[in-house]
Length: 345
Length: 166
Image (cartoon, rainbow over all chains, first blue to last red; front, side, top):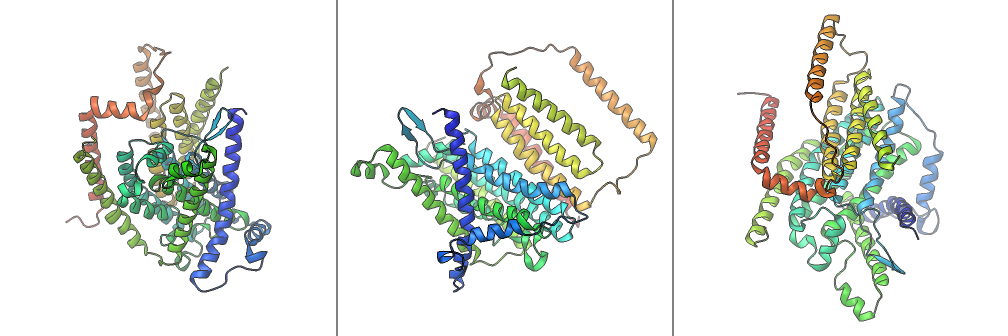
């Protein structure tokens, strides 16, 4: 097959898988919350309620579409589009499994192996704020505007600590390519052992960047009705909600690649040798492991949401600027000191 | 026409068009949004010059951080067409003269320079590795001095934003 055709197939596959995972993440969220609150959860549509996401999707599309009379019509439409677009773009640099050999062709399960992969992710994430800001402003509603402004200041504040946490990781790995980082973790330890504090800062910032509880101040119902999407209805609202679940999926994948070995699993080469697996079979098992880890982190996101109550806004800012930022700086300093002590720089 | 040339013309057209809209748009929010489009077009030019790091940082810093703050302020102040202050004709006249003088200076500065075309440039010249080595070996002192400048500016901004200056 032609290389371009293979890339197109991988892009489409990633697109479909991302949407499917996000679709069932909404279902999983409701089931997880039900278990935690000792309820049954959705169980009417299909066996165990498995068709519930389809019912929700049909409902979203069929509902009446309202564009507020005094809103800025074009920006009102562009807002949710940007939110969905940026959330779907991040997955392009994530390696989803080892290389697969068909004949003499090697197919990497990754859309683009950029050597600035981390910077690409960071750039796309920093674009994500525009979807919320434009949507919130264009609604011409005070609650929407406050929600949008909260979201943007929150995302900018936590991006700084997130970036500094990544810098410590880049110092130890010495590369900006995600593929390279994953391959390094195959040879040595997973990065969580080397950068435990960096991981903690990164995951807290990931919660803030995806606007998930306990940092879901932008859509705080008790204060802001629906936050930035108060005026949205029908599938435009669906886009915003869906973008959140896609972000959750992709940030879980990024966390796994950065700190938990990506698609690698312990003793994989010993296992392959023991069972006499071909490299293709090993790649498939690796992909399964990758998704297993990602699903665990999606569950972790939900676990935290239904356990920890929402922060107050000043607490959120204090945590971001006065706790995480100094911690991330200290992490960089200590990392540099240890690397110097070990003679690596 | 090669594909690179087509992309170049498209990006140049996009950059100039959106930059013109930034100036002529009545609504300041549109100005900011089209400035972001301009930054993207310029980042595309960086990519064409195989300066990946510069392109990514350009997007992260300008489009991702600074323009968010611009948009933030404009949305908070609720600036729009009606509240736009109307300048007096005299001020407009002075502005045109000043801008014309600036253009004259730029034209005069660029007139004498010879344009050299480098055909066989090293493709890794804009990579993170090359840039990092150049910044931290050849230009270490200016680099560190500029970071002190940033720190001073930051302290100044924090000091100004404090409510009670005892």
